[in-house]
Length: 354
Image (tube, rainbow, N blue to C red; front, side, top):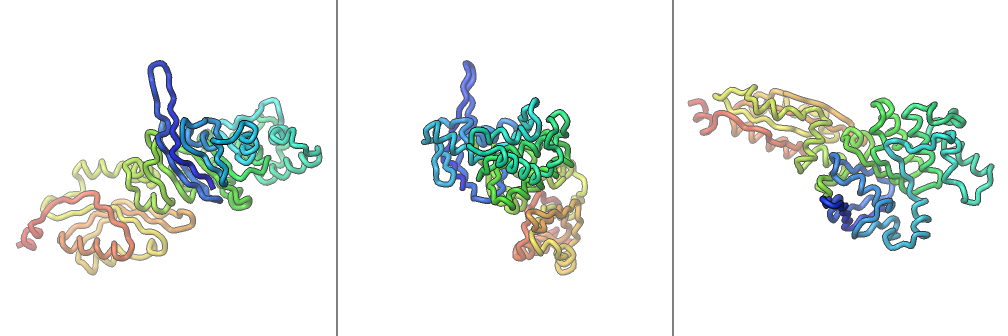
């Protein structure tokens, strides 16, 4: 388990003081694939580097499996860091060493025999799927292969935690998916706790089970992937989810005044289905039972951690009271409804159209 308590980190220059972290607290359970997301300058990279004390926080505590790293001597800290692997955006491989030598490098001075090192390195290369590249040099590898070497090297000391700092940002979509699948496989096989820093919600959606959203050095929201995708509460989380689900420009369309009849009551809502209810025909059901029109303007179904997740944007037209009764019915059946816009007739819909 990783426990971060009230971490503060400030960078100072002659003209500027930047608060990179402001009283950040997080708990990451053993075996989690935990994502930390934010825009550039949010403090996420500083935070991950504080976990292994590559950056030392100005104040606060970093506790890993009961050990407070901030209170260790330099020698004790070096020993503890061996239990924390780290991979980076640009791989950081040694260009003049081949794949075997890159992966074997952290094992130097550990008292292992050549046979033990050889067996360990080949086992790791097998795990990450590049056993055949053992004598290749970094210049001969693709970006995805380089990252696999970096992952093998990070696992050389059999760590308990793997930190990933924008580990897929330099990769194309195909290699990104491949590396994320590899991280998921390693997490399951080794029961390794994985912490992923990214600015891409697609990465979080693909592999993480929990996420923290950062903005200006503060964790503004955290929770399970299902919770954040179905019920984002902060503006930045809503932006990330909207971009990932593909409806980020929809609010602009609403504000342009299309799909509107001023003589009719219209309510536009985002409707979220989670789990088995994603497969039920609620929209058809309420259209029939409440006598309202439901126009689906946007829809998608995803799988988050193996759980069906559906998101619709629907325009309801008809009697306002019936529409609100229908929304109440949806909410009673564990369907989340977020009203985006209301427009048109009221006064009990012009006295039931006179």
